[in-house]
Image 1 (cartoon, rainbow, N blue to C red):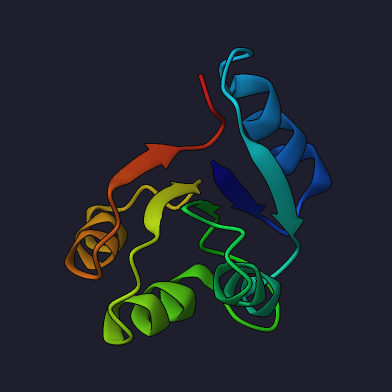
Image 2: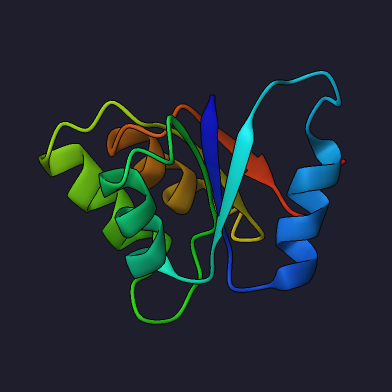
Length: 105
């Protein structure tokens, strides 16, 4: 299964990698911003997208809006330090499967 981890922080991307089950048969692509994340989706490299909200060039909200509007089949799991209820409401309304707070536990 192809997954993409989109976060501008290399440390955060590594933390997500370490949190994944060792026995998962996945191929992992990393993206440093929203544009790279959408390119990975378009290339078929993101059946699952782990998405940060605060990134340069295109933030996670914009990525979610694009995926929502294009009716993409990608499962999006938002991982963000922005744990405000309004942010969680917006990502849910845009089709995010789950919202996980940073840092990952």
